[in-house]
Length: 319
Image (tube, rainbow, N blue to C red; front, top):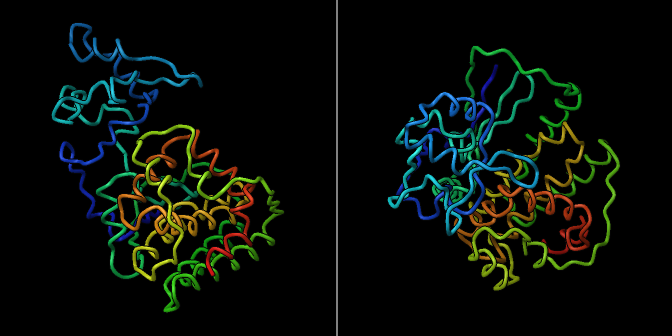
């Protein structure tokens, strides 16, 4: 299997208790099946075993979760912002989400793509302030490809198209011109892939980002104070767009909805522009949206249905 990751991936280091916005606070913690099986083997007399049993619960979707402590803190997050479960039984036995965050892993048959998300403030700072264009490193791992029903021709077509998208973003044109070119390229490619119907739901751009599930009230303040202004021709805005293209573009092999994924890249730049031009703003959006299934499902729906996020509407915002 080929492993692909951004060149900055190896430089990421979690700062644990020194983190300004802990990933152990604000959202529910899922308990995956493998971890649950391990917890069953723990000695019942262990304090950590008793704590695990006390806080295990089911959410409204019947997922196994740990009940949050006050202020939406993970029940194992101690006063030093360190994980008591990690300390007691080792990081390898914490839930899968905890072990991998903020990393994401996408398998495409014989290729596995790995990256890190803006939802971590340390990762956000690193990606936002990266100089130069996004570069990748690859290596071979002795692991068999995962079973899948990916259409090979569509995958190759999208992979080549994604490289074109990266090339567009890396050009010397002003970022607004690059984003316009990227969106028009995506519009034409989408017509080759499948039908894409845009609706006219009358919701403002600002209201798109008033998420029903609020994780950090600071995000709501950012949305309330939105300022429409021109897009800055900065490395940061190219980095944001490239992040979305890398993370989401090839997922179109599964649903053929490539245009929405390119819209996300462009709207990501508008988020940075309108709600606060810094890594913290993009981090807040990511934590609110990319890591809330409810908010993300709503956002994906609005990318196709909101009048303000139609292709032509976005092009107008880029002028």
